[in-house]
Image (cartoon, rainbow, N blue to C red):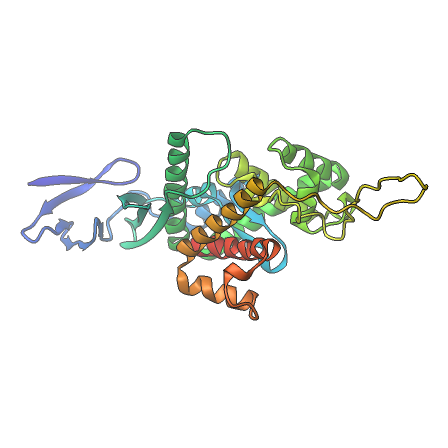
Length: 351
């Protein structure tokens, strides 16, 4: 039985003769079978020219700007990396390659395995991404749309991760820096004050208040916002708009997340003798609401433990609360702080 092999431009590159041990012959060379993909160097019509690849990626990065990377968080919690769009751009310009993705449907998750196949160099690498079926999806969507959202996110992350692993890291890093330079140039041209107002305005379209933004970037007020903060806010908006991240996940709507150093005013109630009562504390929440919040936190921590693995989860807990015996002994604020660290660790794990 004879078959034909096609390159990424859909042109025939040569016959494949299937031999007895199921490994094909391409121009006299035996291919190596790797699970579902074959690895062999093949003669291509347009070999790569590295200078042309770099120029094309850098040029597109200048136009794409914040669409080519994600970045949010402060200090040790800062997370940054290439977007799916940047990885696809690099693979497209790299040429003579292919990405194949397969999914296994298990009880509580989808496992996506993506293979990057370099036809020109005979190189193959694979990455598997586990997408939980119960991952929280924000927004007013029915069950089926939420399932589809989870599935698409898992598939995209699997593809992004394998391309990122296969491509030269310096090329991706340079592309991100070129995108940042383009953003900085735009901010300088319009003025930082205008850029700050625009950043708050576009995030407000997704229900993110000023206080939540300031809390996330660790600023007391808008006057302390820097150019790098604006870059992070723009990338967050880009990720939210494309469905790659959720507003409530990046900018938690928790009451404890007030802007760093901001004073929370308490109501003062005048009494008959002209004196004032001491500042009133928060009213006790409704028992049902309080239990609901507690359950949500427990569920989120349980999901984080499942995604990180028990060992890594317990290491992070021990490092964060060395004097506390178990998660059940944490108060609400401590659990929220712990959840933030878990989210950062999951992002790093997913690349």
